[in-house]
Length: 83
Image 1 (cartoon, helix red, strand yellow):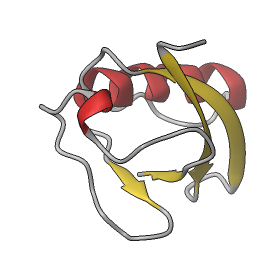
Image 2 (cartoon, helix red, strand yellow):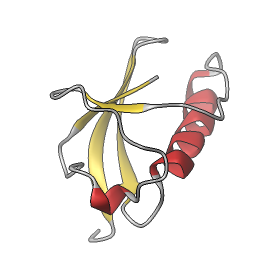
Image 3 (cartoon, one colour):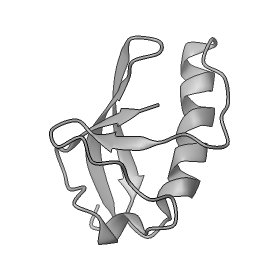
């Protein structure tokens, strides 16, 4: 899985936590939209968002939607918060 990273995704709005692989060659904004759809499918209560934001749970840094995931500090084991 050299083109993906395994992260822990915290979703405070529905108090859920997921372990998920994210593709490193995609933009953060595209990943956020896909995450919104996946979380909606899994939870059946989470609304699909066009403008979700990813935060690093340890540092509080938010990620620019126009940045490729590989150009961020997100690595295997990173905890992210999705809002």
